[in-house]
Length: 232
Image 1 (cartoon, one colour):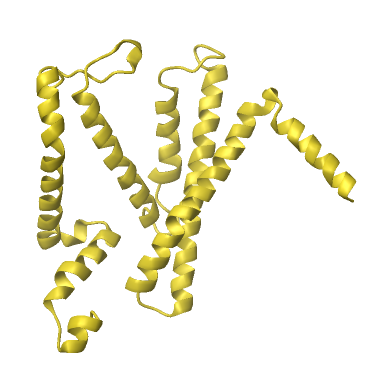
Image 2 (cartoon, one colour):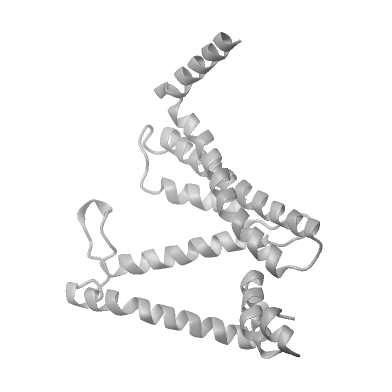
């Protein structure tokens, strides 16, 4: 038995290390890594947030934790599969076969983003909260990266910044880079607090829930119990 298992393992090793299969196997590993990462990120977050802040029985809460974790892991695995598959197709069947094009990653991300995160549920007609959170997270990082590129001088080979007029000049770039974060942080919190105060229904549900707990529920108590030990 051990001999046959060893033979199977050796055969599998030969296949996965064969350069001919590298591109296809990278899609498989991308899906695997997406599922694993999604599980690692979502499970502890969902466990804490749902157990502490959601109402319902323990069984119902664990069902929600499982559902959120499954959705996050599945979405990242699906996106990785679609993205890498499209990149592979464009590499071999694009304008320059055998070579990656400059916009392959953008096109693959565009299509993958629509298929996985951009479509509404056929059952509810809504975008899942997990998908919204992932996209908002990505969007925030994209905005920060674009802001950095805007003040970064251009460089040969397309690896530099955008080199926007005035702001990318070394002196101005240094000043903007130094003060950009304080302004960004202040305006972000000013905006979210104003929205919570007057347009709370438009905020993402998990954000609205956490802000309600911190800023609205703290205005109400009926004794020492609900002042220190319990929220309500």
